[in-house]
Image 1 (tube, rainbow, N blue to C red):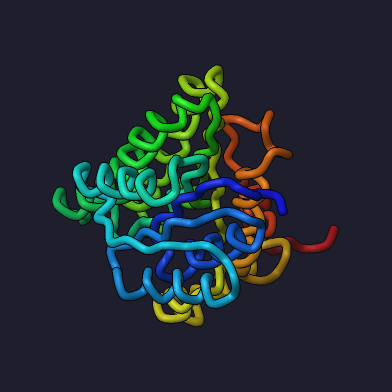
Image 2 (cartoon, rainbow, N blue to C red):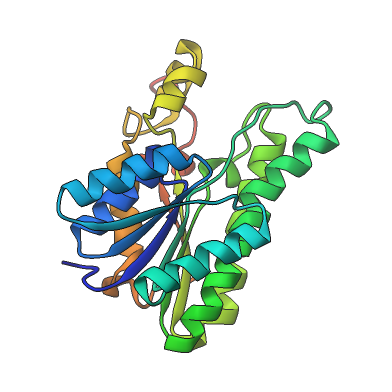
Length: 256
């Protein structure tokens, strides 16, 4: 068990990537605090883990509210004793042309995707500093590395998450705390099945060398690596789990 006796918090764990991360961490011996604004979904994730013999507890949290975040960390310490691992999965998407995205929408996406990741990491890190040990994992995106059409607010927020990851790594690394990020490519989730049209899917498949969408389990595997002892010297890194998308060039070319 790669995370035996570790205490992990996973935000956004009511479904999708967060739920997969929580399940995998529990399978590898971690006690997991399931945190989500969707309290019912968080409870279901927690129950599913405990039904399989794992150790989990759920809590409702608004990650964009610092008092709610402080309560999350405080309750985790009260129930499990400490915090060893934080995975910042909670976030929102959004579409909007560069000239049309409103100030309110831009601020909303930045607050939930960037400010909230900072809030959670700051409060968790204060506890990790006491133990001289910690793993903080942020969820960025390929959109933070390569621009996408009508992705001004979302892409900017994920680029900021990558920058935030580097800043955290610089300030916390000497204290035994690593800060890294995973940057998923297109992932097959209930949400993407709803919002990705057939045209969107076809366009992605043209430029992903692997020729397919990723799975939530593949994202969870990446998080597991960064959360474990094997990644102790990995710090400030963004791991693109994207089938080669950010490395690819033109999708089609004539044969010479």
